[in-house]
Length: 494
Image 1 (cartoon, rainbow, N blue to C red):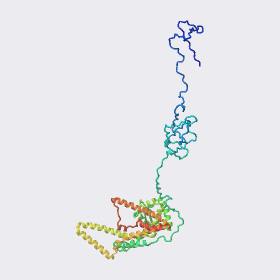
Image 2: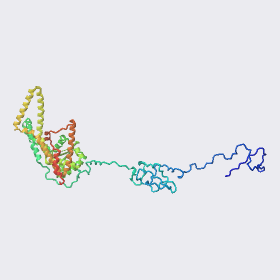
Image 3: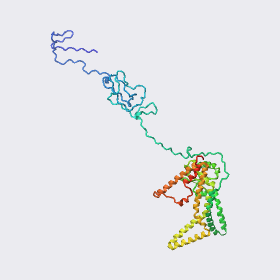
Image 4: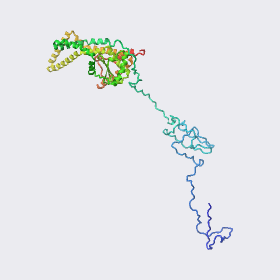
């Protein structure tokens, strides 16, 4: 775009004429140019404003040759270069010093195979940091870029895990088929044995030891029957025949409810007990329907064989034992029935009951008389002692010393009872339940230890030791004795 030419100023005193008609008179001075008489300011050009603005407002790009390396655009995660062993060669003849080593000797592989942005081109200064600049910071493990390999962890994010201690496996449920003492309740054809019941030596010994108690009870019944006159003999016969009630089902049920605190099982409990009971009776060749299953509401491990047809287990044994161990408990109680231990013990207890009642009444009367005699001083006490001693001496001499046997009967009965328990253990072991029965005995032993610990805590930390006479009166052998008698059945060859 052409600019307008400036018009020279007019000289003072000269007439105004057009520029085309009046020439400007300029004197010729070869040495110096003519001086213009102007004293005013210099002519103003049309454009006095600032320089035109160009469309681009951004600063001129900085090239790598004229300044420091261009700054890479900031990104959430800086790119990782595939190799750090040696920097790329610079175009200058003087090699640049090697950058400081990176913290990791083996950096993770770059996710993509394409070269990273701003790779150095030929003839240009690469955008790598100078030797004096610090090495690029690596990202944290939490913000590491995803890697194509599933489950791969970059080396700098790896840490040595703490060694894991092996945790014990949780105990198996009693109803779990994987339990070592779980057995199948399916059985084939049942072969019933010829003798459903028998009386072994233990049952016979139990009856013989109850003979002194029976004679004492007979004496008491004869004294009571004397009040009936002519019907005294009939009273004695009725008492002797009453022993048959031991095998009477309604009487057994009444004894189970009143004396043993048992109850009938619920449908759910029966569905769990009956398959195990059928399996036990099938192995023994016994008709299982001849017996009744009862349940005791107790949180202890126990079972009972009573009368002629009652088999009772506690709720704890039914719910907490595997079916194999429950079968061992039921087989043990079945051994009491098959051997005659249950009915002989109950029959002896029944015929000894009148003598027991008479002894308790006599003991209560003696205590009352002794308290009354203390009111009369030493003379009264001496009189009562002499009177009671005379009666006892007369009774012993009349019955030829038979009442003295009553002092040793409890200890003998306890010994027979311990033998009966060992026989029942052998019966269960012979049916193939020896390992299960050993496990049940171990649980019983632990239960006894917890009970002893509770008694010691109540006694101020002093353990309560059982006396020698108390051990002789125990109806069950100790854990070690029972386990010792099971050893022949626990051999691998059996």
